[in-house]
Image (tube, rainbow, N blue to C red; front, side):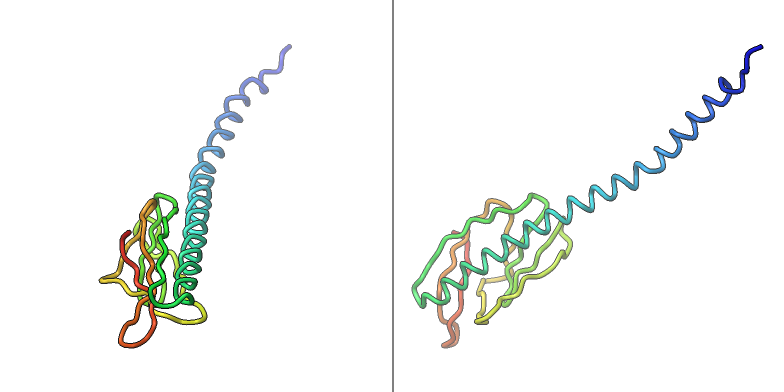
Length: 139
């Protein structure tokens, strides 16, 4: 006589296995999305640091010095230029800040400027109220 319990248990085991897989997929997807966000913000932070390096170079070279900078960041991120820092955004939400280091200087724009991938900006050493600063404007 044949044992049919193995045949009967097979659909139940498959159902339980599929149920466990179905429960783990949203968790895996959330982890992947979080990893992608972290990578995008990391690339944006590196680009903001490069922008500040160029701004520091312009500041040290003195009044009249100018450099063009091309923004190369992931599509989901942006950089907002403020007076003393660069605000990092991911999908429109705050994702961090990179502050101007030493020496401290102002980044001067007409209003907070939002930079996205491919934007070209001009960094110029200027004076504001007698103090040296770096002007930021579209190139």
